[in-house]
Length: 442
Image (spheres, rainbow, N blue to C red):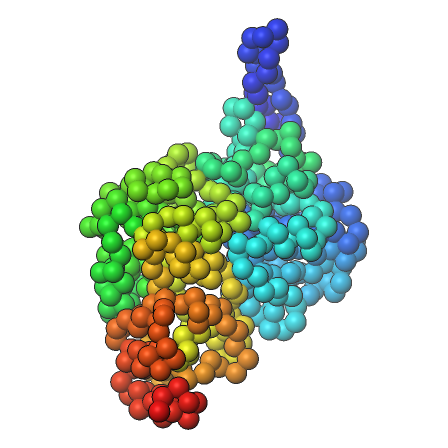
């Protein structure tokens, strides 16, 4: 049983009013799942594992229920089409657990910019129920969505919520809180959050990071994606002054940069002084850092990733990794060797935002070759069937360990020469020959 206290008024004076709510077993969620329901689940650690397990266990009793989610971290039988049309997963960004499920036809994949997720879910689904993990309630009866705001926070007050309260979920600030009086039910669980340690940084990563860090001015507002190269860049920014943060993801690297004193946010136009993000993913140290930390704000993704909001900042710097870049400057950040690997995410949202920013810069980073050096990642054409994640007209700088190619405002011939110059030397002659065959060079 939970007893919380909320502020009320009687005769003009403030009084304490007891709100008593009792946690239910996870299976209680089933009574709130109608036929053909569309269930909305947060990404990563925002997923309420015990509630999804309850759906799995009773899938044969469900009728054409769809679970809509980005980047699932927990594996479940239903992800692999274990129950046919009774219960099916709809992904908007593949992860290690949904990648094989999609490849075998076990789940669906919807292409989407991260910023448009709330709009897509509002338009294309019934918004039947939101299932989310949450922090324990405070003394007023409010819980937070913890590591997340993402697309889920936008449905607070607009769709019914069923929560899984976990003492390991940090209580965070921003627009990701709701009162227990706003939920149709809740359950209790106690398991650790998934931890993702910082990736190991290689010499190539450090070379690329140095080229980018040198081009980040003091006082800039930055967005950094996930991966070894972005993490290496964060490590090299610790001597910068008065940086701001407006990013979709807070990682351990961001935390370390904040603790170095480089992230003050004093020059930010929106939310000055705050670390702004839409979700967090890292180690327990990071989760402890964001707990009850008023310097960090988790806000809905349709605001955080809105290119128009991003463009209000001066000197906005966007840094994202990609898989391959063709000689026009088109980036494929979703497909590896002809197989879908991830999704669009927020890369284009921030690349366009940096383009709108006065003095803004966008960086796309990648190694010049695959790990064994056998394949160039600067290519004349993207691999067959590959999607264009970030289009040529938006890409600003492309960076490998061999240098920086500046593409904005450049002709096709200029782009081609700049990109060949940062390719691995052993692939440059073939790329020049292919560029001539394509009519890019003469």
